[in-house]
Amino acid sequence: MTDLRNYISTHSLGSPLQAAAGEAILALSDAAAQIATLIREPDSSADFAAAQGSANADGDTQKALDVICDEIVASALAAAGVSTYLSEEREEPVSMDKDGLVIVACDPLDGSSNIDTNLSIGTIFSLLPAATGPLQPGRNQLASGFFVYGPQTTLLLTMGEGVHAFQMDASGVFHLLDWAVSIPAQTSEFAINAANARFWHAPAAAYVADCIAGAEGSRGRDFNMRWLGSLVADSWRIFRRGGVFLYPGDRRAGYSEGRLRLIYEAAPVAFLVEQAGGRATDGKNAIMDIVPEFLHQRVPFMFGSDTEMEEIIRHHS
Ligand code: AFP
Image (cartoon, rainbow, N blue to C red; front, side, top):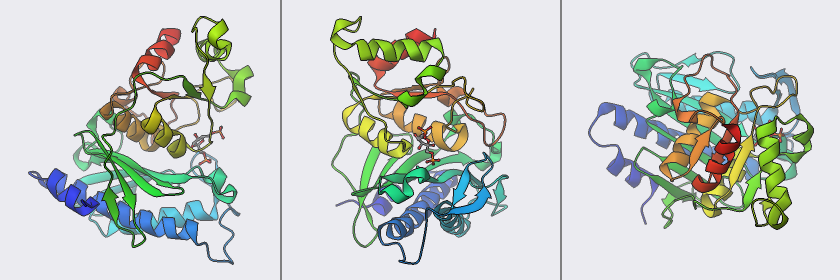
């Protein structure tokens, strides 16, 4: 059975840049194995969900585990010769190896509001060429992926040649799954936080209303809704059985551009989505084409099954 190291060795041939990307991915998998153990077997004295009393660059209250995971990832990347580390948990870029070829952008622990509810959470990462600096469009990504710490610890990875899925064994080795990853084009399942309905702008409100109208409405069929409050968990489900995810901008203060960050959440997921035959947009532009203006920039984020995404884009046109 192929493991991640075998996979990397056959997919990062040719250029020093690809080899550097491969080393960074292996370092991230080592960090993920440590994080998975922390989450699965928390030290009895650890209150990981306890607020650190600090806030990250976006003002989110930092939980102990957020900070611990950020430190685990940073240590692993520093040892792998990465040029620069961009983290949700750090205000500024962290310079590492001045001769490094790859920038790694990361949400070390996505879904941390679920830490003490035993829901799946994860680590999201994006690899960019160091030569072009931190503010690059997602189209420049060398690789991206996310780990899910759930009933299984898994990895979804793209290096630009499709998407592959891995599952971690008890010793922390990630093994390639026999799954030709492709997002089904059709779906009748949408993911959105419906508690925010009164704040939505017309396009999202109209799309969701049509789904809720179901067979009696213009769509002529019933829909189902899921919302896990964990991007990686909702994403894994969408890759598995199709679906669409919506976190649009809304009328709440601070949410005009939605909640998710472009560089280390939306762009890496969008790369995977496009590689798996889906679409990812802010309503008008492909996420992968958006050039970030600053590190912690938020972006309205809608992605998933190609045919259903056409309906969402139609509402936004
Ligand atoms: P946390 O990391 O603060 O839990 O945020 C998770 C997240 O960024 C993403 O994983 C979820 O899809 C989204 O926020 C949930 O947002 P709401 O709590 O506003 O529904």
